[in-house]
Amino acid sequence: MILVGARTDTANTLQTFKAVADNAFTRSILKALSKNCVKDNGNRLEVALELYVGIRNDACVSCRLSRTVLSPILKFACRGFGISEQEMKAKFQDVHWRRALVSVIKGIAWFGVRRPYVPAAPFQVVWNITDACNLNCLHCYESAGAKGQDELTTDEAIRGIDILADEGVLILAFSGGEPTIRPDILQLVKHASDRGLFTAVATNAVTFALRKRVKEFKIAGLKFAQVSLDGLNPRTHDSFRGVPGAFAKTVQGIKNCVAEGLFVEIATTATRYNISEVSGLIDFAAELGVDWFMLYNFIPTGRGADIADADLSPDEREDVLRLCWNRMKAAGVDVLSTAPQYARIVQEIEASAPFINNCETDAAGAQGTERATVMPTHFYNPRLSGQLRQLADFVGGCGAGGFYICVEPNGDIYPCVFFPHEATMKVGNLLKDDFEQIWRHSKLFWEIRDKDNLRENCGSCKHRYTCGGCRARAYSYFKDVLAPDPGCVRNKDAWQRIQLNVKARK
Ligand code: SF4
Ligand code: SF4
Image 1 (cartoon, rainbow, N blue to C red):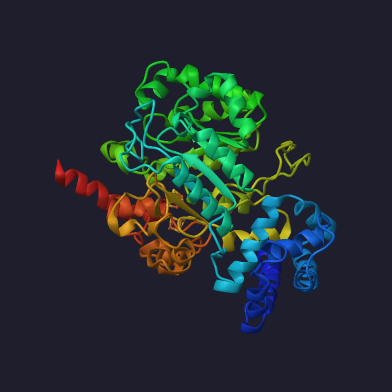
Image 2: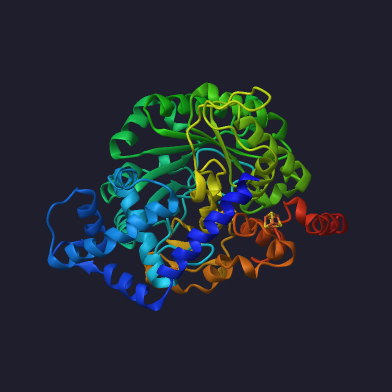
C-alpha cells in the first residue's frame, strides 16, 4: 500500500521534472553548463557546485553565471525529493557527490531523462587489473591464475586512470585475478584516490592477513574492501577456493580491514555447495563487524562454466533472496545482492509487510533495527524516504553498460565482469579508443540499457526497470544478451529449457 501511494506522488514529481528538464531548450542550457572552463580549470558545473555549497568563493563570470542558473534547479530538486537545501549542501561537501551530480546533469544534457537513467560516464568501473591470482577458485569468471601476457604497464594503467577520472567516473574498484598481488597496486590506488576517485578493491584478502598490508592500502587512499568468503565452514570455503588454509587467512584479512576502518563488504557467491550456510554467514558477517553482506549471483562464465550444475534453480534463488531480506531485519549488517530479482522480491515482501523503520515497533511488537538506510545493489531500497524510493525505476536493475562497466587487464572494455571475453561483447579499449564515444554510442551498451528491448517475460515484466534480469546470465545460457534471465521464478520455462538441453547432452 505504502509503495503504491508513494508511486503516485513520485510519478507526479518525476513527470514535472521530465517536463522541465527533458526539452531541447533546457538540454541546450545544460550542455553549455557542462563544458570545461579553462580559466577555472575544471568542469563548469563542478565549479558552480563548489560556489553553491561554499567550498569556493570566487570564479570566472561564466562559472558564476552557471551557479545562478543551477541554484533554482537544485532548490526544485530538493522540494521534489523532500529534502532541505541544507541537507543537499551538506551532501555536496563531498567531492564524490558533486561529481555524481555533474554526471547526472551532463547525462540529461546528452541523453535526456530516460528510464533507466544514463549518466554522462559510468558511476562505477570494475577494473580487472591483473589475471594473476594466489588462489584457484572453482567459479572464477576470469579463469585467473597466471599474469596475462598483455597486461597494461604501470604507466599505461595510470594513463587509464586519468582517462576514467577525466570522463567523470566516480568509483574505481580494482579486481582481478587478485589485485593486491600486482606489484604496483599501491601506486595505482594512490593515483586513483589522488584523482578524486572513490577507490575500492575486490580481494580474497589472503594478503590482508598481514595488518601492515591493509595499513599500506589505507594510506594509499583505499576506502572500500570487498572480500570473498564462500562458506561458513572452512572446508566449504577452501574447497571452493582451491587452497587449504585460505579460510583462516581471509577471515583474518576481514578482521584487519575492519580494524583499519575501511568500509568492508563480505561477498558470497551462492551455489548449491553453500546455500545452506548463507544464514550463518550473515550472522558471521555481523559478528565480524563488516558493513555489508553481499550475496553474489552465480554466473556460469569463465571457470564457472565448468560447474554450471552448481547454479541455483529459480525457486532456490527466490528462497535464499527472501531469507536475505528477512534476515536483514534482525541481523546487524546490511544484506545486499547482485541478483537483480532481489529488488522485485523486496518490493513483494514490503508490499505485504513494510519494513519497520529505526526504533519503530510493528503491531506484533517486533522492534525495528538500527541499521542505516542503504541503497542496495542494483539500486533498490524500499527504506528510502518518500519519493527518492521511486528513483529505483530510473537507476535500478542490471547496471551493465548503463551505470557500470568492466575494464580488463589489457584495457579492453566489456559491459560487466561476468560477460565472456568474446569479440562481440567487447566494446573497445580504454587506451586505444575514445572513451566518451564508446559510452555515448556503443551499440551493445544501448541494446542492454533499454529494458523495453528484453525478450519473453523480462520484456513484459512490470519489474523490468528495477530488475531487468542479469544480462550476463542471459548471455551465458542463451548467447543472447536480451534473453530472459533463467534464474527468476517468472522465467521457469527458460530454466526448464536449459535443464532439457543438459539432459539431452548427457
Ligand atoms: S521476469 Fe525478468 S525483469 Fe521480471 S523479475 Fe524476473 S528477471 Fe526481473
Ligand atoms: S550483468 Fe547486470 S545483473 Fe548481472 S552481474 Fe553484471 S551488472 Fe549485475
